Amino acid sequence: MNRRLTLASHPQGLPGPEHFRLDVQPLPEAADGQVLLRTLYLSIDPYMRNLLAPIGPGYAPPVPLGGVIVGGTVSQVVESRHAGFQAGELVLANAGWQDYATSDGSDLLALGDMAQPSLALGGLGMPGFTAYVGLLDIAQPQPGETVVVAAATGAVGSVVGQLAKLKGARVVGIAGGAEKCRHAVEVLGFDACIDRHAPDLAGRLAAACPQGIDVYFENVGGDVLAAVLPLLNLLARVPVCGFIAHYNDTAAPAPGPDLATLLARRIKLQGFIILDHYGERFDAFRRDMAAWLAEGRIRLREDVVDGLEQAPAALARLLQGGNFGKTVVRVAGGPGDA
Image (tube, rainbow, N blue to C red; front, side, top):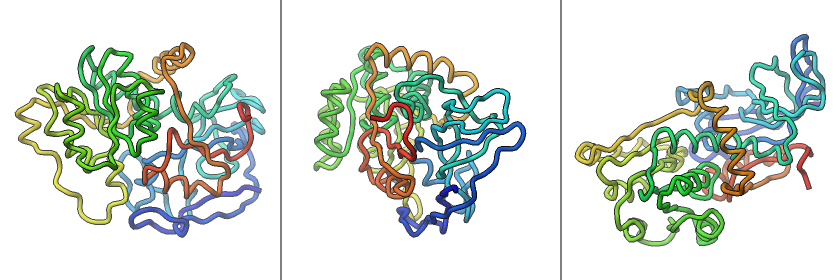
């Protein structure tokens, strides 16, 4: 049998358990040219919240009522009727929030022999790729420049900061809590980290950035963006991959950035959707990131939750900043488990 988590109703604000339904269906069957996949690990990412609304964000269709919640997975091929895949093989898939799924292979990436396959959902997957493209292709930090990144110990922010250090920049993180800030400095190698929960965020950020900010990697919005804007230097770059502080808003959005400041300081503000970059940049990213991990120049942390039924709570916790590292749901045991 196949357990599935489907969308029961559209959330208004933070998603809760009442917005999801766990049902059980017969095991799907692989047709000719397909594979049957068993989900080992499920990725939990902020963008999922946008797809729970009746109208999607534009870059991906919303989940319909009664539909399986979307999500990237590390899956194992349990039956293959496809010439390109063998039973037992591990693949990166888009099976969503369920135990089993079928695929024609067009959306699968063979993972080979990975000691920790769940990393294909984090530092070696979409979040790491988002950091790579946003920082190196769009922001292009130079040695000695100041780079600021919010959600500094999250799946994207932690990689952004470490990549900036590799490029010789001075890195200031913003994170929720003293423990996360210690991790950013002592483990990830950031030069400083600001606790966003402590008073006077703007004042403490200004003190940590006496030469201003040359790059701000935007993935949060809200009060953090308000504190950053006055500190942006001439020709600063701001790659935008998200604004998690607003994903659960029920009121009309607040006014955007001060356009006069953006104009006067010639600031480059560029939104990007990582799906647009897989064709031309993903191979280079996987090669570079694998080398940096092997050399110990990039360090990754996972926040692992056990059980498919825990996925809704894991998403809510992520949206409130309760995660520490890349959030992954372990659906079934697989290679790399302790």
